[in-house]
Image (cartoon, rainbow, N blue to C red; front, side):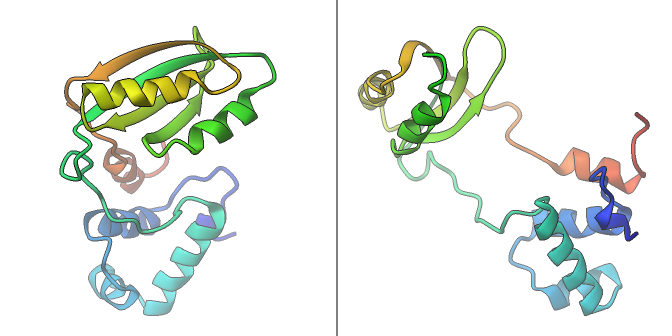
Length: 167
């Protein structure tokens, strides 16, 4: 069984090096990746295909700075929802453009929502839209003041270079 086909989802060193390369420079082509990694073009293409098939690699989107696009305010809301309504509420939240992501959670709330806005007044409008979603029973919102640790995967990929962690 090839290392990238492992059922446990652990990346091998070449997978990790390839993903690190694409994390740093997402516009690189397969040929340039193969040159930098010192492997055949077909090997890189096969690895990419397997990573996509496994769901480890979902695409190559550009990294966007929402503040530079006019959405300088980020907030998180914990939502409590009516029992059995998670899917319907999530679908309605997905229809709100400023809702960037929604996670089903354990603990006090049922859903954690990350949203953006242009100003405090705009955030109030977005919160009002969220609160109006049928099935939302209670919300608690916090505004992010800064992002000391942005979304990242590099440390996990670098750990894969050392081999799988013991479990």
